[in-house]
Length: 152
Image (cartoon, rainbow, N blue to C red; front, top):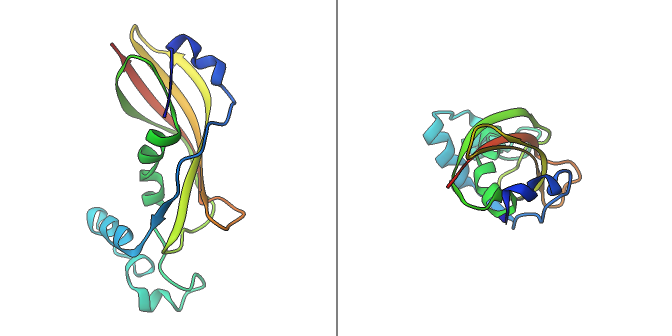
């Protein structure tokens, strides 16, 4: 994660940051997410039945991909210096463009879009994330994520 002085954040608007490392999405991760969210649709957890679909096997939940934004942000995002914590504030746009097949590798690219001082010691960042799939032309997901940073 890139850490810069709060007053320099605006200098990074519309500049793509370094991408994250690749992360493999295996069946164990998909099944664990299904267990936590109680979403056991066969396309995610039944390898035999999913093999007969156009995907040829299981796929990750779209919300699993979205949930990984926190992980990716810690590796390819941007934050102000002196941040005590970051709070997920929401999203302005999320689109799942392509399914993530089991054993795919994902990585994210981040671009800072907006910086807003909310209150004294609070900065809201809007960051655009693109989650790509290794070997695929179309990304898995694009999302504009809002993060509220509380400064010391």
